[in-house]
Length: 90
View 1 (cartoon, rainbow, N blue to C red):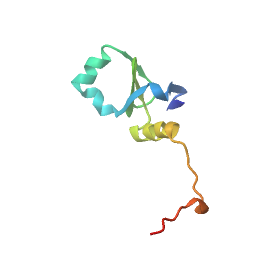
View 2 (cartoon, rainbow, N blue to C red):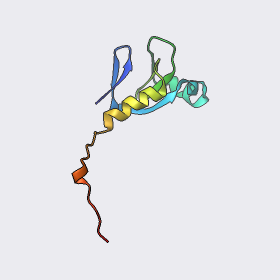
View 3 (cartoon, rainbow, N blue to C red):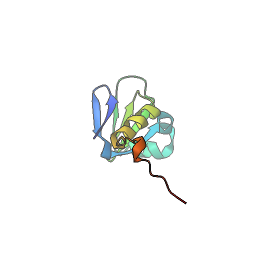
């Protein structure tokens, strides 16, 4: 499955290591990571960053929106019917 990051950019959902608020970019740990991997900035004011094994992508979507999209990629909808309910007799 794919995770749509906006601006016609997608990544494989299985390649996503983490989705973080953009404020994390100020941390010394991430600054060190950014010096070692490719950083991609999509158009717009960055609100979140997506960490993969070889890059950090700054996106204009919020972390909550990206997490919702990521969960949709891995969630299989289930349908329950009333007659499927099993009653336990005591």
